[in-house]
Length: 234
Length: 83
Image 1: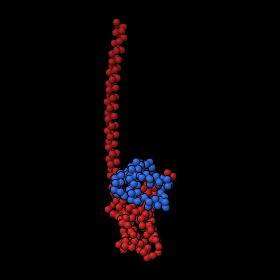
Image 2: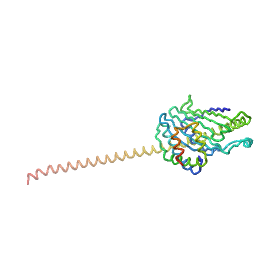
Image 3: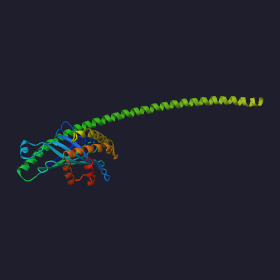
Image 4: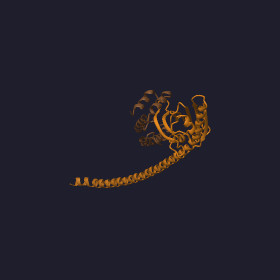
């Protein structure tokens, strides 16, 4: 059995990182990932955690020597289960290989959580992987070594790929914010304008009422003056 | 990102777009009301059909037995929804 551990920090908030991570593929770096599908997804009614089950198909890296010795398919299939706890801000994803399990079993766990010293601006990424090849032979050791090397190589790619997607997510968020600000400005302008219109209509209305009252009063005055006299006079 | 079957990729694109928006603007803000269920049902039906055609369903079911995702009943419904 072989273990691989890696930990690093991203200079971005946890919400940005996890948003980007769900959109990580495709990216120009991780070309070995051929397809990603969501098999199932739900929110746990008790905890409020988001559970996601995905299926990833990747091109299989294996040296020619191993390919001659073992029935290694061109494509490897992985199942991944991720859990997002929005309250404590913890993202945990574990994945397992579904193919070649008679040769090697791989279990990878990735965790994203806010940096304890800089909660709102930095995210800590922890990655562990466990490789278990069947038997104790030299071949098993070779298989494990090859898997760890391939994994290390892809881990570096994985970070670079995610960074590209993070930039894209930030760009899109800025655009949305700009559109929102612009929209708000238009709404504000609209409100000011309609206030002015209402005010104008109100003033106009008041004026008309005033005039109406004046006219009415004048009319009433005429009537008051005319009626009794005409009544009396007739 | 491509789906395991090219015929599901467009449904996946629509679902991903809906989910990604919901995740950042609703879920992370504390609103857990689902919004993408209809498109997800269509997409998942397409994917499970492809998974069965490629004989990957048995691999998934074996893995689920070992490490369940949700209760078995739900998993069965999903597994058979596209057949």
